[in-house]
Amino acid sequence: KRRNTYGLSLNYGLASPLQRSSIAIDGGFFYNELIFNQGGTLADGSLLYHYLRATFKKNWDKRYFLVLAANYIGYRGDYPASQGKERPSTSVGNAKISLQQRCIISSKITAFLNVDSYHNNLFTEQKNQFFFAETGSDFSFAKFPVMFGLRVQNLLNVQQFNTIQVTPLVQRFNTININRRNIYLSVRYEL
Figure (cartoon, rainbow, N blue to C red):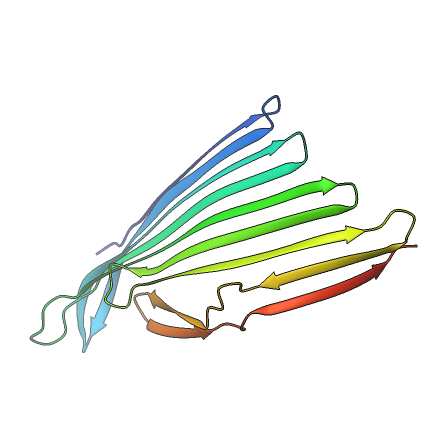
């Protein structure tokens, strides 16, 4: 018996130079019919992968820049049942929502703030949510060829997060450790 793969991907973008903004939307799905060998017996299964991404960018007088982005990736697997057990069906989704801001305060001072909201393992018992934030600034002084920078990463001091990967061959649960809150100071000399 033949196995098929189907897919569709669409994207749309709109830029408005007069309003200094742009919108981009991208989405799609891929469906695979699968065949499994269970002790010499062939069994049917399937895997569906789908995604959606949306981004909005805008700047105000090239002094304040804003990027809002949302990403979603989902998997749904339909696998053959093991001996005497119910046919398993797994759905996993991961989403990320981002806010990025940058402000040019003067020709010598810039600042930024990035905040990401992660929603992992949706539709499972291991679902979790966490926020990741970083901020920083660069500044220099008139007629002084040195630029100073300050960065603070992992503002909320997130320690770890979990992910699930589901494929026809592997089901994996990972715990990822994250570096604790970091503060970086830098000095750059400009020639």
